[in-house]
Length: 99
Image (cartoon, rainbow, N blue to C red; front, top):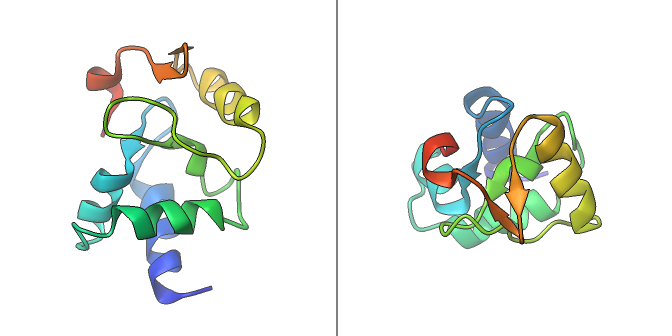
């Protein structure tokens, strides 16, 4: 694991609680790499610690779910178990639950 990946995982785990989401760009900003949203996506795709490191909480800037290394239905299920509503591939009430 790279230092960048470790930073992504630790920040996500400690700064984005259950029931909330963050964008790839938002997580990049949190780790002081504001232009690294694609690298954040790559780190989430390689996350070996899911669901303890909740990569399912990272979504696109428009509220769409984005990718998931496993079946997307697992991402939806994990979000719904945390009280996040998903409809037609987008987070419902996105603006209010995004960190």
